[in-house]
Image (cartoon, rainbow, N blue to C red; front, side):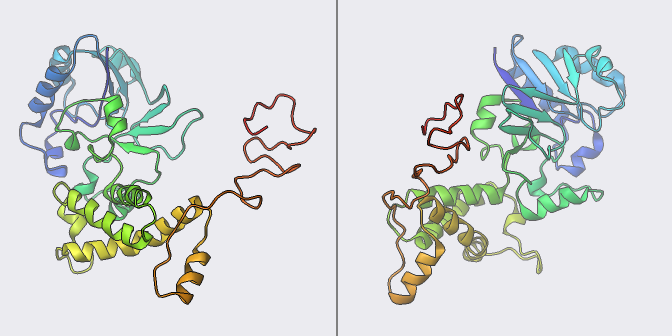
Length: 321
């Protein structure tokens, strides 16, 4: 048995074709892909907005969709109770659900429940390419403008980005970039940070430029024109302009994050470059007694909060003791 996820199918919804640039036969395509992907013993978690039409249309579809099905009700599903949905094709229906360490909700959750690492949600559709509905919520507009979700633990599932088919949950979580689940800005930033960390002793600035150039080169083939469009003049930016703008937005943040991880500070960089003609090279320093990675005697443990001496909690199992 495998666990799959899908969301915002909007079966038989005519307007969604315009809102999300869907093909004319998107309903038939979703049904066909579902049938080709899901086996009878598989579990499918639908993250809301199943069907937009008369109930008789859904009653004609759900019997031919294989697998056991759980519905996380979306804003277009609330007119029917969870019981109604369980009488019409779903094995269970609710408004949110913890599934292992994953929290499912239709809207992006603003908080993450205890013991959960990620929030899989729907509702935003193909937002990175422009959801053509003039009646958008202010938060949705802000996400579109920022090109990234509100929190790093959010994962958007949009069938427009999965070829209108359900995706195995573990694959979706393992490859969020492939399914555009985290936003283009986050993809570029993560790629840049990964590249910088692998750059070793080379200049962080050079590593950042190389990383951004490579990330954008890869992304250009599968991102929208809006990502490469100037917000003021509405003209398509050149790759060099995109790199410059992305670098301007993220380089300070990345440099500072890497610096903190290496136990250094931006002050080191500034002081070095004020006295030398060569770029400052970030390098990992050995731990010393003044380093934050060393817990001095009688100091408070950063992991559990108790002391290193006799006053430590008896029940503390922190590895630092």
